[in-house]
Image (tube, rainbow, N blue to C red):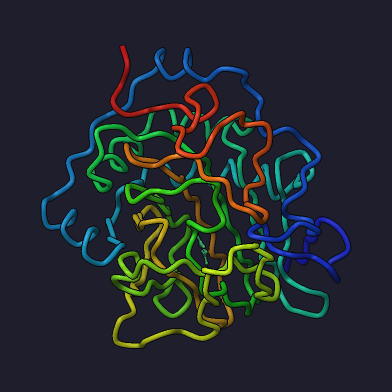
Length: 314
Ligand SMILES: O=C(O)CCC(=O)C(=O)O
């Protein structure tokens, strides 16, 4: 069994971490490519035909399950993630969230798509950009970043309930994460969602993945996210096969149980911004901690760093 921590696990904190943590520090620069626009225009991505029923489910529930949407990408994305797991410090924002004495390993890392060739190929040539635009009901889809997760067999650690928007330096209603299972995952151990929570209008304080500590947000309007699974009959959960996708809104609350894993549970998410989504100045730390953006609140995220990948531009 891998214990595989990148450093002293006693203080390890999740990438969705806080200012003093391992996960929000990086020994490498996530911005490997100065200007992504030429790369975006030199490549094309296939169109994804979303069914009206799936779009309706996404808009209503804040999450939709797309079986076998990326089966062909499982092997390349696993290979990409293995690079990250084998050499965490060679990539951006590596983090182990299992504390000293806890079994298994809960690893995550993000903002590596320019550094890991399999990830780069995925974002530039897969149907993910078009899929994101379809579910966001947006003309365009701009890539924010990717986030990869790995829980090893024996891990018995919940993913704390949270939603992603307050971690990010963006705001908007047209957002989507495309979460691809890289292993078969039982419903009991898969990520779960609180249906309709994207429409509550509430923002919940970001929490670390290691022990659920809330961020110092400096924003008194943010609430505490639920410590336990919120409302059983409002929960969306499903078993996943490797290659299945879950598409969910940045505002949808999600988390997992701490049921012990008997097999690996790996996943790869890409985060997408739609037409109405823009830069926002959060008073506390954001995750990823993106610096030097040179943006004012309300500005669209800059296209040279966060490329628009749908529609194709040539
Ligand atoms: O896989 C998990 O348990 C966490 C996933 C997650 O929080 C995310 O993709 O935003």
